Image 1: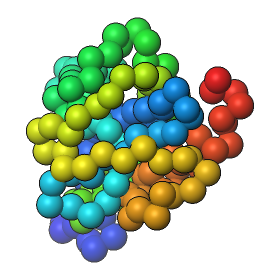
Image 2: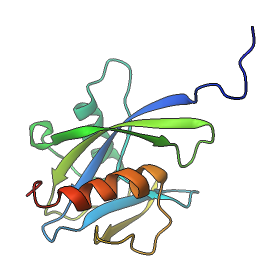
Image 3: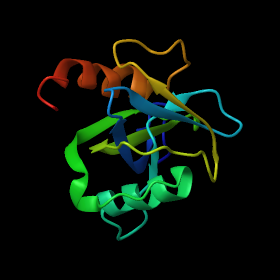
Image 4: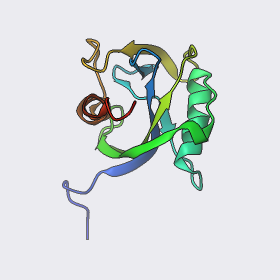
Length: 144
């Protein structure tokens, strides 16, 4: 029995941050050699708790140290992967508020703070464009 072209996409499990600054803007990142801006975060390693994966990735990619207990779990979102055709990202998304500067590191080439009311005139990953930013816009009053 062979897999058909309609097979379920392979899943990439990630932890991602809806990272919000003191002014309410949200931070997006772009990986080196790619076009899409997305939430900061990354893959969850085997046996790793999502919030610990998030803390590790934020430190590696942005030099940002967070206390995992300060990351507020929002929900799981799934969308087509921006940089890996045929894959779907399954993101455990956490709200993280910061008031410190971040610096792109590791595979992050660029960071951008955007007003969540728009898209910052950026090319956005499907997860960010279709799910996380609309979620933030709708929930802004309750996330305060």
